[in-house]
Image (cartoon, rainbow, N blue to C red; front, side, top):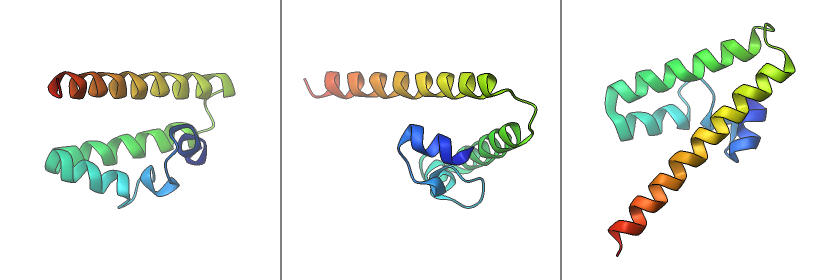
Length: 87
């Protein structure tokens, strides 16, 4: 399932893996210890959720869709903020 997430977000698989990956390292660099812990927790929870076998394919697609929406909403806000700052 992490492979699917990596494909959707166009990032390497190591970016999403729940070990000492680039995802967790970047969270630590950007947000400190709390960010690192939250990134580890998120990666672990998502991995467990998808690996549990309890979700239907439709449920997994729904989760991925919502994550995708959140990602692009954040990206758009960031671009708008940068645009305003560069005026």
